[in-house]
Figure 1 (cartoon, rainbow, N blue to C red):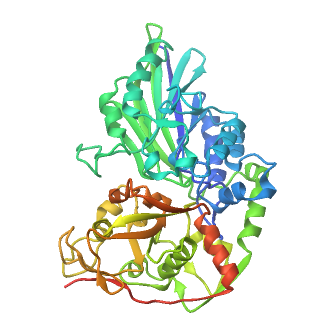
Figure 2 (cartoon, rainbow, N blue to C red):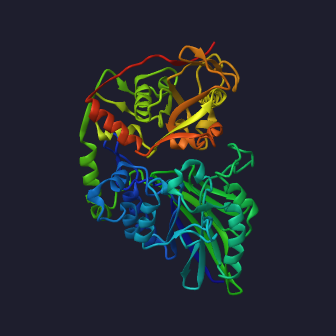
Length: 526
């Protein structure tokens, strides 16, 4: 009997990481496509039938990608992420939610520059219901073995993205879309093997089927495996999880973390019978880049982007008088502090309102040193958010604070713990907000939903029916992070400048910024 192997290699959530560097500290890091390339070359030398797929969230996420889209000096150069994938000879790429952060113009340019197809069957042109980017799937032929790759993207993007970045697009349901396309690929395209590359994750535990998050349309990987017959391999992402060695309803599933720390690998042993290839054995693993040398020939081809980015990052822009460093991320979230107060001040200054809310996005955020550079700005404010002022009620404010208060487990008398819903399956520390312009106390000894024990504005209790204008990120204003109370609220003002630019401009204007703490909020327990 004729047999062969098919090797499927996957990256996902690379988020702009090419070089092995932590841009916040400039220290060496085991991440990036430079290291992934070394692993890919090794796999291609050892195997004949290799399929290489990127699963989305590629072109946004590091200072390198930010500087590329914002700098005039790069306008004559192709998108660095696409240039690298072209060089590595990817077979296909899928759209992630962060692909839209820099606008449709930048995204369309990236798609045009690619020598590989960008796939999405469920991102439609709202006018004619056809796939907006033209390619729902691709077919890869290995002699007489025919492999189909279908691209899908989480449809939750309108909850997060600025409306002007997704004009004319409709995000259809991935499960419904797959139910339509998978039979087509089997029957019309006569594909032997069907791979679905889905920029989304799993809403349920793979072993028990129990929900691991609030069931929405954001992550539907479990449903895809259980409800769509004919899928051989499901490549996933978005959640930044490390999933391998798992099958669900006969479908092998993979998710390779983020930032290029791992390369996903699925191996299918195929047998040919009756003129058709069929998978008789499947297994998967994650290949770590730790200790793997980077592909210097590849990195040399995009060195100009890195050189320009590093020069930009080292530009001094201002000074701090006092302490705005992050020494303990938990401590930052337990009581008012200078870093968060400063970011809220920048937001209020830009928006012209006196209430603001923001977050410490990552536990690795370093804070601001005495002498501030652009590197410090982008290592603390890591997302390309703009700002919105929305008008909310006092009840909305209280509900939002209760949502933030659920970040903590109910105090057990021993230690303060983070609610697993904010860490598993994906770290979501960015969904805990801290406010300026109001006075409040959160008591984590109390049950969820009853923790806001003080809430005042200008010395008076916040009233449920009263209206308040609040500045926040566009992500949060759209309800991102399950802040559903903000959805559909009146938008009073939009500030269409990225927050990193607003912070930098504030430093350039003020020269020296004093670290202040007015202690308007704190977290307590019995």
